Amino acid sequence: MKHKQLADALSRRDALKMGLLGTAGLGLLGRNDLLAKPAGTQPRAKSVIQIWMWGGPAHTDTFDPKPDSGDDYCGPFKETIHTNVDGLIVNKHLPLLAKQADKYDVIRSMTHGINGHETASYMVQTGRRPGRLVYPCVGAVVSRFRGYENGYRGIVPPYIVLTQPQGRFSEAGFLGQRYKPFATGGDPSRDPFAVEGIVARGITDKRQRTRRDLLHALDSLGRAMPGNDQFKALDASEEGAYDMMFGDARKLFDLSQEGGKMRDRYGRNTFGQSCLMARRLVEHGVPYITINYTGWDTHKQHFEAMRRKLPEMDQGMATLFQDLHERGLLDSTIVWWSGEFGRGPKVQWEPPWNGGRSHYGKCFSAVVGGGGFKGGHVVGASDEKGMEVAERPVYPVDIIGSMYELLGIDPEGELPNSRGLEAYVLPSEEEDPDRGGRLYEIM
Image (cartoon, rainbow, N blue to C red; front, side, top):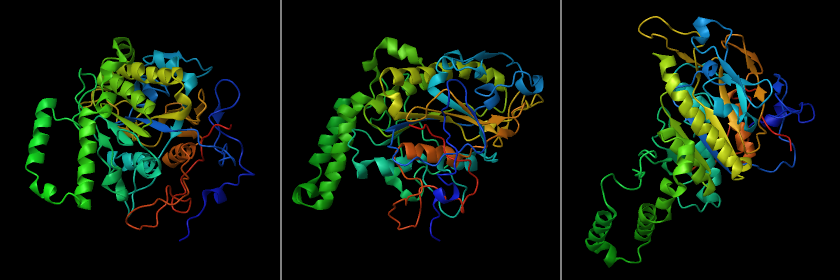
């Protein structure tokens, strides 16, 4: 079947101008406020920092608070704070992010209706419902179009995960191992940060070099066939690996070069230091970085966990926005905050949950900023208790398609692959009619 162009479904002449923009202050955008990509718009973004809220954060306890919904819904989180954007409130435990709200946009009407981790993760990461083929996630697609085949010459791979693989879905899908992320392992809050994917824990540089020398001394076949093309390829791979161990790549992961004040500013914890590492990777031109932020699957004692996690998230994420802005990097860097779904707006007080929140894919929140997203606006709305989408549903394909276009990747284009499959970057409307439209800044 010929791939149906999404532009056919949404006339550029008839579409209303829409974006995460508008007059100063808060923009609440309706269901029909859609925009096909304006002709002549140039790519704005060079990199993406994805903050993956592993397990699913509670929308009503973060960026879509419902302080008047009663104890069974908001629990003890009845207090909110105003942000630096008129009309936008957030949970009171996010005071630093409240001061940076003009740099990001809150989407309060995300939806896909799936409550299982694996399927929901796949949908949010690929923009597709599960089917016969396993499609690549956003990071792998960006690696394919902005990686080594298309001019990337960075000293580290083009798709990095800090620090552990996300699991629950196949990141590269049918694109194959070449496009899987490089997961650093380790803990950047420890000093020094031992990147487990580069150097094995407990192995000194001297011992590693001695091992290499011994390996070369035993390589009689390689010495006997110095011109063999396959051996040349293996030698090149080895050189790249050892450059990661001892060269500039290793220095890139050395957070001690940032100084104590900057590290304190981000927070001396795994998430805060991962945010700092992500900024360093963006500075070095890495196209896609995922911060795999665990601890949000709060079925039990949710509010106790949030009193620990929210201040940590607030410090690291707010500093990331501010630091990118101060360095002139925010205009070319998309920051995307989301989990696979939200959490149930109604608190489960009964045992064994004791104040927990369940999985909830019917309505949840996401945050995007930088790289062409204007900042300071809200898209859509949930109802008074956060149970249902009340205005402008936004689907994973909408967010992903917007990011692709801001990166200069055609969401309607073919997805090249070594298997010879007829595949496209995102599904057509015929394949998946659930979509609300793109989210852009109009230049």
